[in-house]
Image 1 (tube, one colour):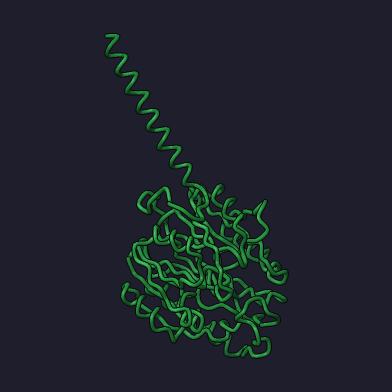
Image 2 (cartoon, rainbow, N blue to C red; image 1 turned 120 degrees about the horizontal axis):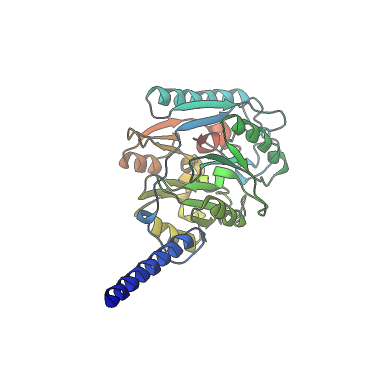
Length: 333
């Protein structure tokens, strides 16, 4: 009897140790990775619900009044505001069609504000998230440029009306929302760009608070000042990117995260903003749609090969300010 109890005790101890190691291993994945070998595979990560609601910001105050990125240089007096309004309305109409097709579920518009000429790029001011308790929270950006800092309170108030709890960074000096923070499709993993508009310290705080691992990617090319200008996850296993935007360490991490990497030539990525496309994969009905600036060839071919319905739109006036489709919307829950 004593011998049986002894073996049972050893078995329980072994199970406890194994469970503890597994827990420690899981906890260790909730951190920021900048290089080396990832301690997890994509299959190890838990599932994540994709948001299917779209927010846009009305463009009546959109303007180019200074230079905040390389794409704005020389364009301060070249903006055609009437054409910009038409292009915004055309994109808005595309989303309305996608509602009718049950590809997205909702489309809302936050009013632009006087003195906030870049507010139309509403991917930058926030990072909406569904936490582990299925509660809606929104992380407020800390914008690099003073003129853009004025945009953030408008979004904080708006998201509160949608039932979100605003969250504020306590340590990092810079964070520019979904311009730099992009989730892995369907998984609890984030990619965070840094070097131009966001500081890498933001991801340590975000990873700890959200209890989610983050792969931090240094952006080294001034043409790609936000992650959303050079990186488009297409599925759990596929991504489209411009390799010149990243360090060798960053590219190595991406090779561990995706089975298929489609490289887009830098000249196409710069000329057409094709990597600022908005790809939508409705996890409920399986519909896959990509909205992209007209004129790309390689990127469009990749999207079609990956079975996306490609919708081309014209965003030339917004490209003068450094943004295209992805910048002009925010997906939220």
